[in-house]
Length: 115
Length: 112
Image 1 (spheres, each protein chain N blue to C red):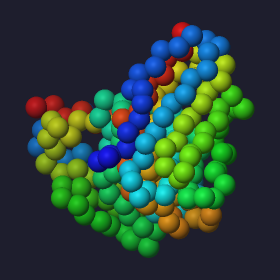
Image 2: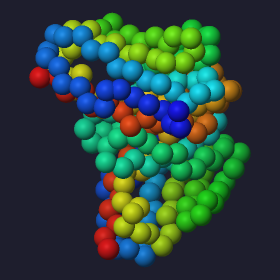
Image 3: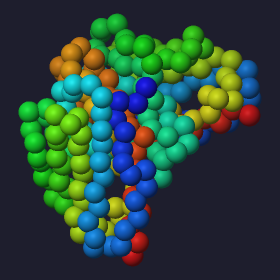
Image 4: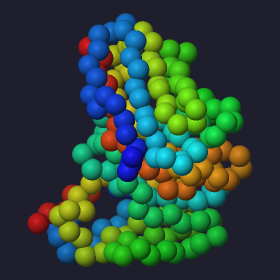
């Protein structure tokens, strides 16, 4: 596709439920990032994938959060047993990768609301 | 943790005026990037400056980098109402880290 695609654009769930957020990066981009943004705040790094290397999971806030990237393309971020503090916009970005990240392309995000 | 911190947090100017936003960071960097965000959703890359560069221009944008002070500034000249958005700096730390660390952003409002 022309850009990074995220789905769903909005997700409302009940506390305790599991949710899956999807990201379809730009074709040919080897690097994929997940960030979280709470209302009026900056971006909080969650996880980074680069090609076939082991992902950098250092930003995941708890073991309820996990992500995978199948076939080096589509990625899914899973949040188990959601809590109200998980409510935020979850942003995915991709880039060509390389030695040092340059020019990330962002999707429009998934607004997650946990009631 | 936040690597970059923008200043001011909010800025309101008249159309046609220049807007200056500042970013300070804590550790050595490979490069520093500025992004723009409309309506709290996807970010758009504006400009990148490398650690060995001091100034860069792109259209109405001018970015400076002072590695001795660990700071950068973004200048938007002849601002337009359409420039209203949040602006974030993002840094890539020196070394093996591959992640961009974003600041908390400056909310710019350009009044027509």
